[in-house]
Image (cartoon, rainbow, N blue to C red; front, side, top):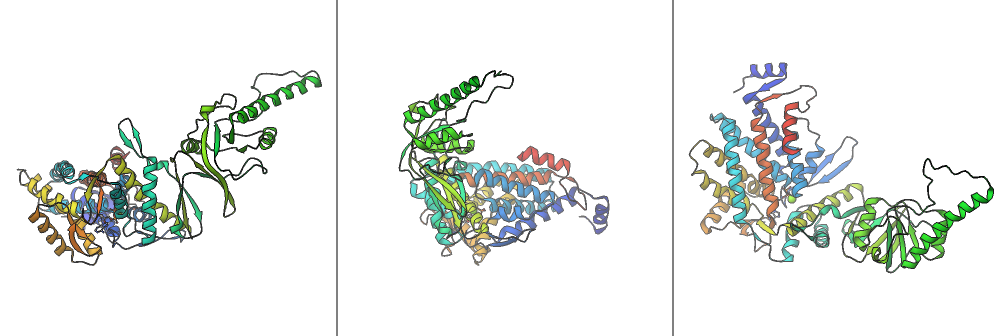
Length: 538
Ligand code: ADP
Ligand code: MG
């Protein structure tokens, strides 16, 4: 044990080593977990965050709380980074990951004090992790219906925001995920980043809706162009509709005024030809990445074509997805098969900015329009939607479910304890410590609902063992132990798999840091810790 003398020496040299470093790291992890523990689950409390500029944010999202905390401690940063990884990879399960990691470290600390070396604990944790992945596969089951995707998004949103908003967002997330899911070479892919999110400040958050297409802050290139169209063809040009730019070193020696006129005439002729091609193809809307010449604009307007210019490449791609158009380099090379089709096109004024709303015909590439009275509200709506969308997308990619309500963790803990008995060395103790750590989830869920956490945990464990039923969990809507399948509290397998992996990775990384350099005033991440972090997460 570090004595107070040790501690003061450590502070002076700004260096801690071995056991003292581990103790500090465990404390940091527990402090961090303490900050988010009360947000876990449907009965979790919201946190009021205040940033440097005095902005207030109310959230129930663990990773948001952590990221806002601006913690300097290297271990704490590592845990936050693993929770952010969880957020990126699995979208959900971020709070759980932090709680499990901290608990693993606390339990490891207890073992260290009983004389077990951190390396042995790390090895035991690794064993337990691989075994957990096998158990998770066994406990999980296939998705049976579309309805179960909706229920999983509802479980994911439980306790976040108002209940009317949860209802709206879960339905929208399911719809959006179905629109982007597509058969790839190796299975179904549903990339949530394909859904664009735009905020339209004002109104009620439950007025948040999906547009079957794209919304861009733009108006037509000419004030006289038609703003509202009910269906038609669209041409997308990854280029310009302008007079040819002269090549740098091509010198044109103009000797007579007639030559200049002839040159200009030729340029206009080329533009007319291009516009002519757009007309012949029958496009009602023309979208161009770069500029459109004044002359061409007037011509397009006269021909009844609505044109949009200077549209970003990313938006052009989205337009192609939603209308089925193929991008071409110039109007001259476009052919009929390059055109896409849209169902409607209109302008809407949001605040002071006119927005172009284009609804495509493919049912792909949707845009979420968030509504809410304040920036903070809009952000919370966006975060909740992203979580629900992530869950729905994952179920398209991997259609397997696990029980929620602490059932999965209790099942893991029970089976891991049996597995521990088969391990001869001291790693056995570490596997048991790992199993205990997972129980922080059912405990915290019960605790946050004002229930007796130990009592519920014991009752749940006994119920699962007696019936050999891994799907028994705690339904916090009524505080009873129920079959999570019957009550519809299920989560994607991938979230738990990633949470267990992420938590083990961070706990093991901390256990391996036996010597930590620690700048007293400006607690930055030491190089070697950073290096390990980079290896692990970079
Ligand atoms: P995380 O950031 O880890 O996802 P959440 O605050 O979203 O944390 O809480 C998720 C936990 O809440 C999961 O363990 C999930 O099973 C549980 N949960 C959600 N709804 C219910 C419910 N109705 N009854 C019991 N547990 C629930
Ligand atoms: Mg969650």
